[in-house]
Length: 139
Image 1 (tube, rainbow, N blue to C red):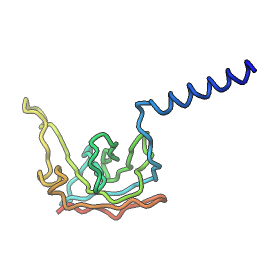
Image 2 (cartoon, rainbow, N blue to C red; image 1 turned 90 degrees about the vertical axis):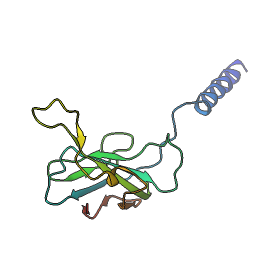
Image 3 (spheres, one colour; image 1 turned 135 degrees about the vertical axis):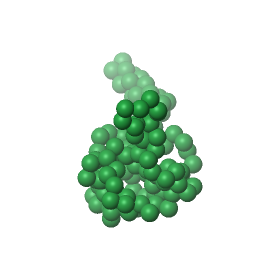
């Protein structure tokens, strides 16, 4: 009888700990790779962010990636390179770089419209499978 109560008590503690956890639930993610091109310029070190369409919670993680020298990227939502949850997204991109031999702070080298969800005309859809997106051509 004592053993049954101890097991029941342990199960209750585990249930309450799980229910009260501050850690958000992780949506399943799927690998996402792609490439960005812009007027024959390298977008190395640019940051690309996927914003779920219709999602209003500012605490929901946003899939993101740093663009490599060849323009490719691999999205991360929770852990390095894990991809993104299935869904439709608006995409923003910024490339903050410092001017060599200058005291000036870094500046975004891309047109500001690409940095705002409201004005970015870039969209993407992530399927529940590995995804290789079409090249995103910034215009």
